[in-house]
Length: 204
Image 1 (cartoon, rainbow, N blue to C red):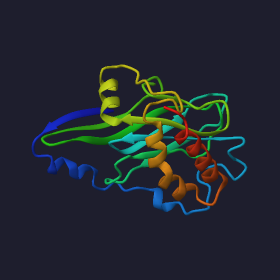
Image 2 (image 1 turned 30 degrees about the vertical axis):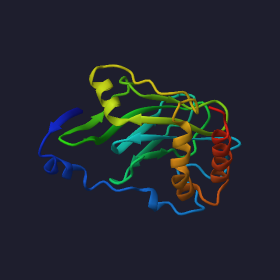
Image 3 (image 1 turned 90 degrees about the vertical axis):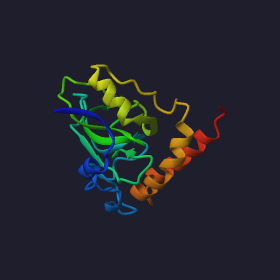
């Protein structure tokens, strides 16, 4: 199912469609690893990727590298979360995730875009290749409306390579709170802080 709408005027009625979506980040306590893997998944042997997925209320990614464990990563976002930060559970280096569904809206004034899409295995419009080296990686910013337009046109959506975009520093700064909430008191938060300092100290 693919639904993509541009609505003009009277937005209050349709915005109620998404009012029930709430952030799940508060359900994970500091000091607890998240996901289906145990504490053997560390920054020395695994990866955590993250990015700002702006405008979304729901998203889901499926691991499609047949040489890796089957894994689905699902996210819900708070309505007041400007960055809509998506922080993955620890995954294996070399994993490959495709977007399988996403729902949300973005806009302002009298115009707003809404999308509600579920993608088949063959519809690999957004694919994220996890680097082969363990560690923390940022894939910067993905605007939900730009992605929805791209899918509607039947085009693959290109994202910046890990830690290489012009907005990477800003995303690292914005992600600090999410990492602390999800991975506080674990080696993953320590690894994030170390990587963040490296990125922020890089010359532009």
